[in-house]
Amino acid sequence: EAIERAKEQADQREKFYGDLCTKLEEERNHFEALLVSEKEARIRSDDERRQAEQTLDRMMREIDRIKTAERRRRDVEGQLLQRMNDSEGQLREAKSEEERVRLHSIENVQIFSQWQNDFFSSKTSQEAEVDNYFLA
Image (cartoon, rainbow, N blue to C red; front, side, top):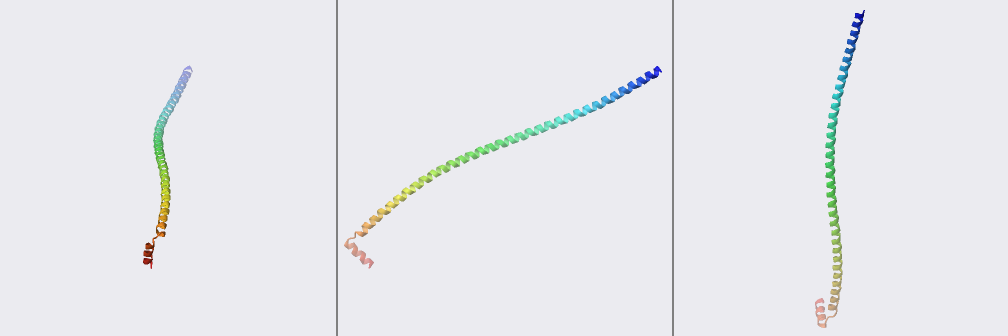
C-alpha cells in the first residue's frame, strides 16, 4: 500500500509537473504572441510617426510658399499703390496745367477780340470804300 501511495503521488507529481509545463508553454506562447503584437504595433507606430513627420514637412513647405506668395502680393500691392499715388499727383499737375492753359487761352481770345474790334471799327475812309465795293 505504501508503494501504491508512492506510485500515486509520483503520478500526481508527474501530472502536476505536466500541467505546469503545459501552462508554462501556453504562457510562453501567449508572451511570444504579445511580443510579436507589440513589435508590429511599434512598427506601425514608427510608420505613422514618419508619415506624420512627412505630412508636417509638406505642410511647413506649403506654409512657407504661402507666406512667400503673400509677401510678394503685398510688395506688388505696395508698388501699385505707389504708382497710383504718383499717377494721381501727375493728374493733379496736368489738371493744373490745363487750367493755366485754359485761362491763358481765354486771355488770348479776349486780346484777339479786342484787337479785332479795334482793327475793324477804326477803318479809314479809304478802307471803308474798299469794303463797300467788295460787299456790293
